[in-house]
Picture 1 (cartoon, each protein chain N blue to C red):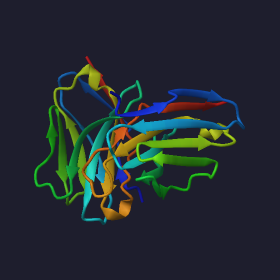
Picture 2 (picture 1 turned 60 degrees about the vertical axis):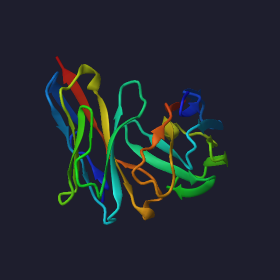
Picture 3 (picture 1 turned 180 degrees about the vertical axis):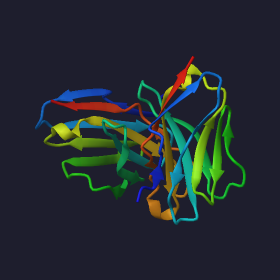
Length: 116
Length: 115
């Protein structure tokens, strides 16, 4: 079974609008972390935001927020006030507790295009 | 000062050749990784080292041999390159075991093209 599922291969959003990128995960480990990365066309991997499994509040980082719904095992990324520079590939990733070998497991990504 | 640097950025080589990609991190992290990103952009873990010790080897052909001379360096040597090895290879590092909420820092990637 896929550990991280991103069901939206591509998304379009108008500049200044908000957009939600979906991510669901699968783990039986009570301790885990969820991460979002951005990969622009230049290719580098840019860390955006993380959420711990025990965190009570949703993480926020500037225009990025993580809508964490633990019972539904979802960790959607919300980008508010989209900008042209937000056009990129976005990856959701998970690090599981002690048994995961400390690795990050990635989803297949969502290509976001911000339009004027 | 670059946190995770890998060289070269681009590598074009013929089938059958042997090549190496070098990676260095100056963050003081204990754990380093190699990821492979295929043509569909899927990122898959290849290897993980913690304090120079191999802790993850994800069914990678043994033509791929990682080497960690110290915890700041993790190099990737590939023997007998095949067309299917063409991909972007990312080195990354994170603080280490137990730092579950710490993000991984990535190098800029090495685009390997085998012709």
